[in-house]
Image (cartoon, rainbow, N blue to C red; front, side, top):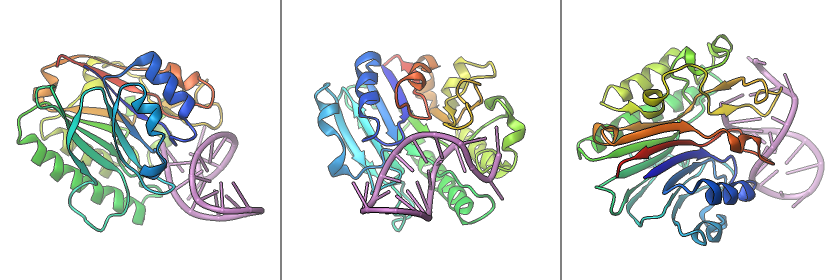
Length: 259
DNA sequence: ATGCCTCCCCGAGGGAGA
């Protein structure tokens, strides 16, 4: 089963890219972030006409996540548990039918800049809630994939110019420590497992020629429970869509699970 | 790079992103 995560930076601005990507790359299961759309305005037909089931968790203007699946989805949870007052749509999870109990979680972790400040505090609090949810989901001892835009640069090797990010919310010690605590629950960073070499990135800023200069960072991740990691065949980054017309600033990241 | 683009809101120009 081929599973991809893709921050598309606006689903309505990215309909051509999304259609082409689904036609050419044909994921069995895909999670999208930053759809920037309410559920009613999501281009549902574009997805369903290509044989996908669709579950969305959107909001007006910002954020928003969606799960696309060839197999039916069940037991959908919208919103990261732990704070009923949080209005930001950054989390959706579901069980994928016929895939050995696979639970897929789609997350758009807060950016957190400027740091320090209230946005950084929100990021760290969100990561605490993520920790609690991940710990609870782990107890099922089933294949579990936490995929999305983490807005975390885990290591210096995950940035072309790590020195430029030292004060940034994506790379600050508190952020990286929270990410390490998540891994310590027993998760594997799928891409790092299969692509240990430096220089693998998933985001390049629109500005200053970051893409042609390969001035990137690796912030889109798929974390696997042991039961999922046991079935990992491969993991890779698909860079071609970054060269398409009107691209997202992120590219898809893939895993292939023997499910 | 505390923003050189691009998205959203809407119908101007500001907030947000990373």
